[in-house]
Amino acid sequence: MISLVWTETEDSAISPSACIGASLCAVDDNRALVFGGGSPNGMMADAWIWNVKKKEWKPVGSTDSNENRPSPRYQHACVSNGNKVYIHGGGSEKAVFGDLFEFNVDTEEWTCLYTPSGTDTGNMEPAARNMHSMAYWKDKLYIWGGAGLDNVPCDTKLWSFDLGSKTWQATATSGDSPGPRFSQVAQCLSVSGKED
Image (cartoon, rainbow, N blue to C red; front, side, top):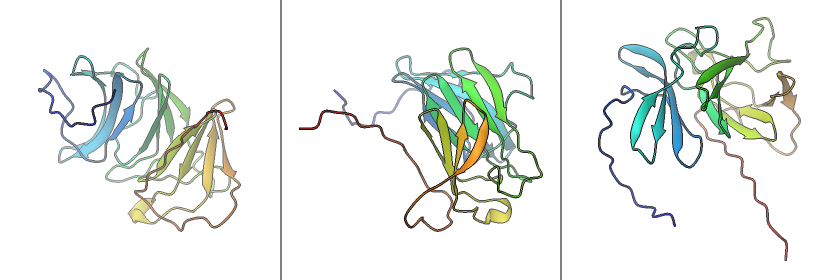
């Protein structure tokens, strides 16, 4: 039974640095991943696992080469599916990103799934963005909203990334879509049951 009561945990021997704009993503019933963030000292690319049962932090993924792991960033989108965590976009003091990474929590390895072409005008791949939302559904990642350079809102297209073919596609939607915005939240829920 879930208690729904806040409790303060004792300080772990080691822990992530204080920051803003980091992501926190539940991996399973016992683990959560924190990645990136910004601080007065600059952007970070740290990844940490919080173990709920042990009540301790563990730094992870620090041995990967720079090509495999995300660069320091904050205000990126993050979502998990099983033991995989996906990081898309985000920004730094001088840039906004459009790359996509996968982190395997069990092997503690990063994989770069997509690097933007740099030549597309938003027709074949989404524009680089931060402060956007991302959700996982049936082997695809969906992103929407966000802002580009100078906090200019991005288009209102719903973009999907096929994890099998490693390609982006603007997804057809129907009805009235929300106007451009950033710093919103998205969540996919799968509800199954028997109809009475």
